Length: 185
Image 1 (cartoon, rainbow, N blue to C red):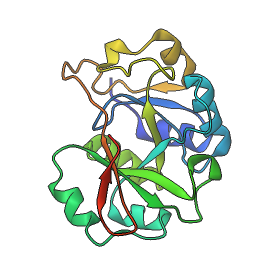
Image 2 (image 1 turned 90 degrees about the vertical axis):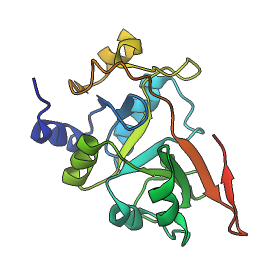
Image 3 (image 1 turned 60 degrees about the vertical axis):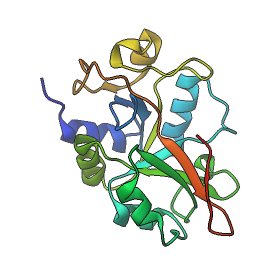
């Protein structure tokens, strides 16, 4: 059975939470501009709101809508980096404060083609956080996701549930004031 994008987009617009495969690991997601939906993810994960969630965008054009500035070397870095790369940017004005830490936001341009298409059709960023309870090891495959997480969401993607490839989180980096790249993970 295929996933119905129209249904998923309606759920996202209604503030619902989805469980979906990314270019890294399985993630919990929602409309990144909906504070109530974001709070649901914090509740599901039992995560402190002082620990911001990252978001995914479909492409560089969407990225530019949600950040104040992009370091000139980011586009080159994104093209040549071997693993999915989340970069911390100065946030623009279109995202809720709950996603920000000191005025910054962690964003990844999603490389998973089906999910990139979903984000593009949705027209806004989607939260992307590992599908686990805070402090518990992240699931490397769909089968590793706890039933409590699965039962807490409004939609579970069917796509890629049988993948055997072990997922790993993205690399996280930022540019310092001096223009140097600093890696956090």
